[in-house]
Length: 293
Image 1: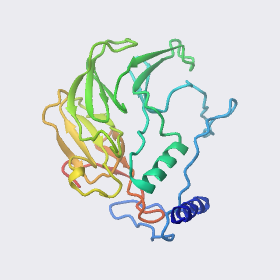
Image 2 (image 1 turned 60 degrees about the horizontal axis):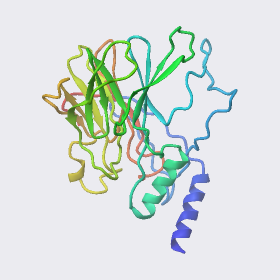
Image 3 (image 1 turned 30 degrees about the horizontal axis):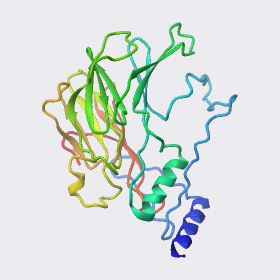
Image 4 (image 1 turned 180 degrees about the horizontal axis):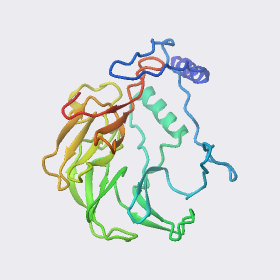
């Protein structure tokens, strides 16, 4: 009975409208005051797909058209020099155990369309005549482990799986990678309940260093800090995997890395902690400094 009452409360909370937080900027942004009661507002957007004749609304001067469909949970895009578009297809693995909280987490992931058998592949889309319509589709590489980040450095193509960075020999205009991938760097992870599994890749402007993000295992250090060693961080390494180290830490789940083209400064978007009150802690974008927390 207690479980049913709790679930009813969660569903009621899901129907309530969260207050809109104020945006904060600068080195000392003002955070919103805690709001809500003992239960957080839960309002997961349901993944339903686009009707045949529908599309996102574009600003003046832009047009949105469909480029490709029928992909299995596309999570990341990468544009090759010849115009080929690569799509990493990967999904969240179900949480094992965790009681009621684990059940709710799985329910929310499924509702958002994020929890399916992971395709574990990268698909190549080619528009040969540049008319905005994909002419051919190829499996670029498969048999991966929740691939996300991608990068091309010279004649090597890098993939950030959830457990390791691997690289393959790349030939211009190839539609499929051949040969076994070489493990460049094993990344902190665990086989079950791996938490924030996405691994972004970014290449320094001079092409000499590779940066990879590793999100935290849990939400707010639920299982202690020992399991978080090397996580909630951005790592840096040479393209051959040498001199790997933590570049910056204290970044709960940095999803998205990019270098500002004029200054060469690394930036990231951080998915922050949950279950600490409605609108807390806000997600944010920040520059990333070597050695910073």
